[in-house]
Image 1 (spheres, each protein chain N blue to C red):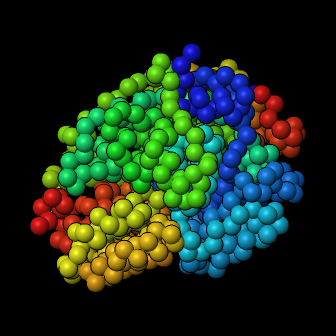
Image 2 (cartoon, rainbow over the protein chains, first blue to last red; image 1 turned 90 degrees about the vertical axis):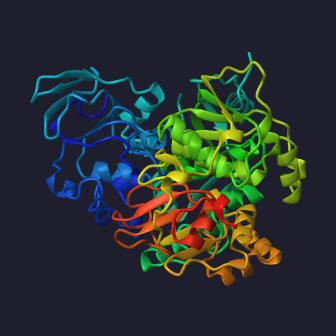
Image 3 (cartoon, rainbow over the protein chains, first blue to last red; image 1 turned 45 degrees about the vertical axis):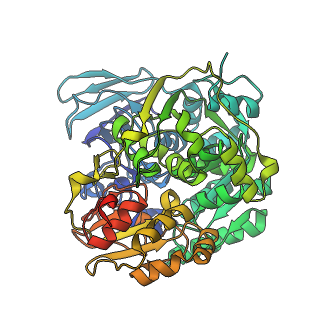
Length: 169
Length: 417
């Protein structure tokens, strides 16, 4: 599906109900037109050391209702800027889900209980499977709806519209 | 086949029979942004090489989240938004006019409309039987340019309300109770549709409070049918001709029906740091409060200020507690001045802030200190929401807020003589 079908990286594990205020607090709204500065505060109130530890290709792994709250698309945008290759969660809040896909950031719905913080993961986007290389667990994730898959495959909504000029459902 | 309100509106607008789970493309009656999501929306719009919006009179920009601007960066964002409005002919609501959702209710939303806004509380005008939902900047950028967007038709939970509200118990207590019952993700991707005998006696203001918080259970929309109350409100706003009756079919298919007898409700409070962490007010007695914040798209309307003024009349705010009051719009402020509520609040010791979002999202006008406690009539109490991750936010009704401002502790409004 996307550019690279097999993704490999480490898990950054979070719990349930990680709000958009934890991902990027409202107090930094004055930086929203300065994305590199804004991105320095990614996940700050959930894990203050996140931006110094994350490496390109890593994954955010969470529980239920990831990204609840505000419609601020800056949340998935700066998660993607930080190098995160995909979000794995038991469920993702509706607006965040659509925003992540629109930013070309895969949000994958799966049971994340068996993944621990810092586990090494291999995600096969085309096959819909996740391998935890640290503990050997094999997981599958739910299908991304076709309309959103088409948007994700173009790298997000803006590249999709630039290519097609309209919604092609 | 019988249709829910969501299916009905999306069918009427898309021109195809829309059933839950279908994907439809529908034209939009209003597309809007506010000042903290607008700049990214414009960036996405320009990156897509669009020069003009599809229908300028159906596009709006609201300066409300950071108004008057507390920083040069946000002032420059405002300049960008004003420039975009000048170039494209979009409506712009200036500093001091009020919160986008209140102004959309006052001036734009009609039964059967489809509205998308780059703000999660766009659901508010579901109170007027408009299919109104929040989206991100990319979706709204494309919606501005094309005048349409795609929707997944949501499955619906019907909230069936019976009985009458007890004294000093109202819409906020009901919606907090509901969110506590189903959880912060209890209605993720779903529509909430309110029905039952109680709604005909609920004012439009109360309906706006409830629809506003549908998103706090994850819902895509919070819809009320249109009725006499809707018609009277539209007439009062000079839009009586925009009224149309809109009810779900009696044989509509609901994924779940949640009955609530409002007779049994008590004044409710949401505890830190989650909106579904709900308890009756009597369990929180003696919780010390440093700041009370009354206002927002949830509870900053005339009816809310009337409740507060009644409780505060000829009394003084507790000396160790700050009371901040923000009317939801200039229109609300004007009416509250005329009714004498503002005079009452000021004499009681309240600090009046200009119409807008104010302290709700932690940018300015009431940022909390470390370990401080705020009781707010707003809709979110997430950690860090009011500008400080070391502070604590409780959510409650205007009646609880006013009673709490008097005593300095979370207080049951029924205990204020």
